[in-house]
Image 1: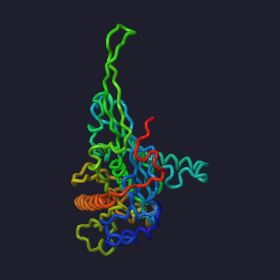
Image 2: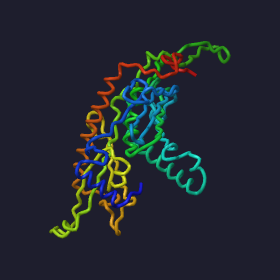
Image 3: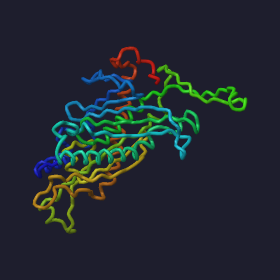
Length: 365
């Protein structure tokens, strides 16, 4: 996102005073609304949106008054395990940005410019998918609990994240959607059955027949173990303001001292002004599961050959401690809010609008 130097200066100075352009403080999340099949968020205008009928779990993250909307679907299948990990389930993740930023519209369907945008979109999808796979999937659920028949059948959870609209921090919103969808995922009860039968066609001996018995009753279904411990991604954006002419003159060391601040849940304009972004994956117990550094914005932030920020992908080394502290505090507040909201609305039923045909039973094909 290209912004002018004056806009970048206004945004950075507002963050340095701990009063951001939308009125939030540096450690404050935006008021996200979460809609899924096990909760009924009555505070949202779209609370009665139906869940995905062919999904085992789903969620929708919506930010009222902004352009952020992410939906997630979890589909479970019984498959053969990987030969290298015969006693672990399989998790797959796919991120779709085709509907985000005008992708797929008629106006953007012709010309060399459209091909370039689609290529950039595919690269961004691949980058986001790779980051979420490394930061979230290894800690999303207990992989051993997905085993139905050791060495023969395991559950494969296919997680599809579709970003319809996004106003910054797409990794954070996607991680919330994944965690909520996994907690709402229901796996039907499956029993391994081994029957003995006569095989008269070959040698007259007895042969065993292995099969799976799937119970379609929704009330007997269980959530994957460990889904409540799925970590969240907290992206900490570092915004830096260059020293003024007075500071440069009075400096005794001769080095420039940048004024920096770390904020969370940055909007698109704030991401464009960030000198660096650090993605920290934190679980419910406050343990760091992964760290990844993204480059800063810098687009349209040049003023007479010098950037307004401290650099496109750099930050003062003294900010490392503040980045970790900011991510830890933000994760604690976010987990508390998510668990409190889930406890308040977990006792209500969600009328998905599809009637009673498939409400309490799985569709077995």
